[in-house]
Amino acid sequence: MNPFINLGIRHDIVNAISELGFENPTPIQEQSIPVLLTGSNDFVGLAQTGTGKTAAFGLPLLELLDFEENHPQALVLCPTRELCLQITNDIKNYSKKMGNVNVVAVYGGASISDQLRQIRRGVQIVVATPGRMLDIINRKAIDFTKVKFVVLDEADEMLNMGFQEDIDSILSTTPDTKKTWLFSATMPAEVRRIAKKYMNEPFELTMGTKNTGNANIEHEYYIVRARDKYAAFKRIVDFNPDIFGIVFCRTKIETQDIAESLMKDGYNADSLHGDLSQQQRDKVMKRYRERNLQLLIATDVAARGIDVNDVTHVINYSLPDEVENYTHRSGRTARAGKTGVSISIINAKELGKIRQIERGLGKKFVKAEIPTGFDVCEKQLFSIVHKIHDVEVNEQQIEQYLPRIMEEFKDLTKEDFIKRFASIEFNRFLDYYKNAPDLNAPIEEGRFDRERGERGERGERAPRGEGGKSEYTRLFINLGSVDEFNRGDLLGYICTNGKISGRTVGKIDVKGVYSFFEVPNAESEAVINNFKGVEFKGREVRIEVSGEGTSTTRSGGGERREGGHRGGERREGGGGYNRSGGGERREGGNRGSGNPGNAGFRDFSGKRREDRPERKRRF
Image (cartoon, rainbow, N blue to C red; front, top):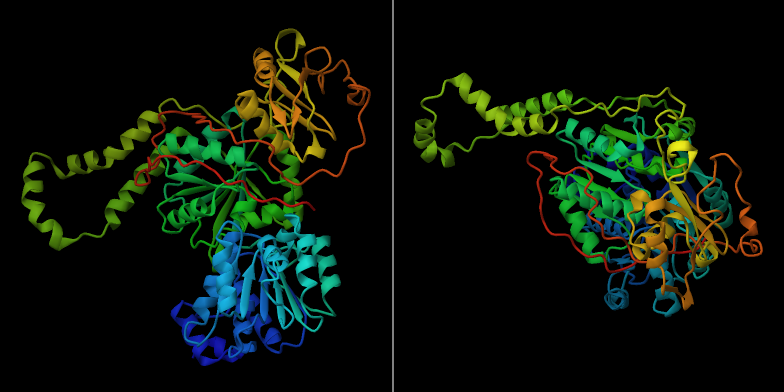
């Protein structure tokens, strides 16, 4: 008998989930389902991603709602389109042996008229992202006065994305008698406040320690020079021939740049970020779920809600700003009790961040070494050997070709045949990694490699030329946080209009009504000229050399007070959240041509164009 029966789930639902492979409830399901089935408590559930939270609230909803009534009785709010679709499909699958269960997914990027049509036909469960849900409410196209249950899934991420006001507005249309169920992977203070605001003495369930990571995930970090980061990343991928991973970048620009470079280098990769249309996102995710993609390059926001089985590695190409975001990233692997690896590629100055994440997770990270070229070749060789040994032979189909095959190889000994067959792929890696340099940063842990003059992540000092003179020019731009720019957005705007590669831009310092950024001395004049005639929201964008023409930040000799530029700095307004100020760079950025890529994972399909900016919200 399926153990879900003992939790109080009826037979037709259990039969449906048994066909989906549900054999035993996960800890969060085992603990939460009996509580939620009473329907009498508000509820707070804290559990890591990949632990089965959708079934934990979806199965009780199917038990508690009256499906003879065709009006909204349950509302599930979640942060992203992908998660919205995933929850909707899961609930439909759980209820496939029931009658008259109507579930509607409401999310941006799809036809609102189709969604309104489904709502008018009758719906009991609405799964929605806050922005589109509020749009439909404002059209007075839905009635939530009879809603019995509201589920806030991934509540921490909804708040991180700035949906607090939208959630307030949506919940104000629901009755006070409803029960609110809140699920979250982490419990920052903001989630605690939302629980107090919307709930009355909720039942609280914490699986594991708050804000800790999945125990089945191994955490590793590699210290490399900034200029070797991409090469080191490729070598890590090549050292793991069967990798099926998600690579996280901080900005949409970096995401697209890395994906395009990987595709040019022969890897089967693609990007997922907020500037893609829904159709493009669906196409990328379909390829990834079907394992036609080996590497998915994504931003934090775009990757939320990705529930793909058997992700082996999560790679942090750029570390996130918050420990909670790292927890969410690493939670994309080791799902449903499986194991996984979370890798971070850092420079020496980011060791402090690693220590901070270690303290937040309560888990020690392993400092790993970038494999040598010989190590990669050896690993690839034996991967080929294992694939040959384990390949399934279609005896019936290949039998007709065996005489010709045997004739072709009749002059070869068994040993010669094996050597030649294994060398088909091995030789490519042997040629590529011949004389491969050591990519591990030769520095002591916790110290910056001043002797080599390495430049770390964006915002750190650029290298100096002879005589201590900065090789970067510091420029002033009359755009800042009041124009809803953050550093990533401003980088994209500078690259697009200044016609400069993002990898050459140095420190970016965003102020209230203006900002500063650094470019190589040789490119400063071209950047200034390229901005001539550029306008932002009807006003001219002005670029000027700051100070004496070279950057002095952290370089000795003192820095000019930035408040003194043009009569002092005005008081900063409340900066916006992640609003893009310009088009995205379209740069191939091939950092390492001639890479062999991975055997069996080649994809040279053409690139698509991104044409739909993601809707952003303020805190």
